Image (tube, rainbow, N blue to C red):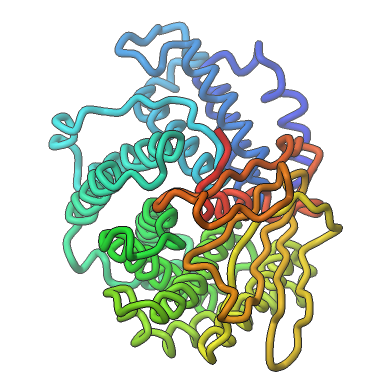
Length: 443
């Protein structure tokens, strides 16, 4: 399979003269899909962006389509140019959100025209619009409550496009087949995961902001926690039911984001409890069930890492295990804070980890630095999350941090494509995740 893929990319999709057609764009989209399924998200993003640029040059994004874009007449019956453009935009926005990169096309279909689509198509198009709006918000002000609420309502409208029974957990026994029903159930499962993932992406920037600034932050924190729980539950059921050895690695990355978000949600809910009672603290009633699900997900990742030397699963395990230890310690009364540093280290690691406590978790992101989750005595804990400015490598005093905004955080140059899944297993998903949490991402 790898040799066939290498031959196709070397001889076809890397040749601009050969891909200057709908058939050629289709091949480039398949290349991107292959890379995404294999877990190489950065190369998948680049391949899909090449397909987008070629499509724009051919006018697929416009209302007038040239007949010369078809190599074979039968392609007219097989490919709808408008739908192909929509699929390119959807893939671009998904990968851009995962990696914290800018989207390639901010254009959207008018909501008025969506009434003519079937419910599942209408839902998908509404969520594509929501993805684009999240990316736009992230480039200006991540914690813009007006923009966030608008997108939240759009996602609610998308969810209501489908009947209630559509949202029942997927039949994973059916997914294991290879007939039409299996395909239908697979699509339903992926769309449910995508919907919950968008909710996490939308509300994640509020997770570490103090509720004392705005009670609306609690709504976002709970929305992110609930969506993360739904993803983890679906992921565990999927893994326990599917015997096939191959599946899209994107699910693992989404599970990583969800598990990290849910861990931090419980840590944050207890941190705020020390100051005053907030709506967000009702999350404590979900703690036991969430803890069980997170431990089950960790066990899945550890088994994958052990049985097949899976570098992605091993990296996720190396972050999730100490995060669970930190969550447990915070449940027992310990205090932690999150900061960023330019320090260069060979890999993520845990410092001072014992059975009783985790002193510090340092998550290494190549070419960027490290995210540090550090234990602090309660008397020295700042009233809200402290972010270290790596340009001077000194703590920013709490009075310099504007409420509702993260402190400055800028790391070095973007890693090149020479980083494969062995060098940087999480491909930048970790960087985008912590960038959203601390308020600074790629522009």
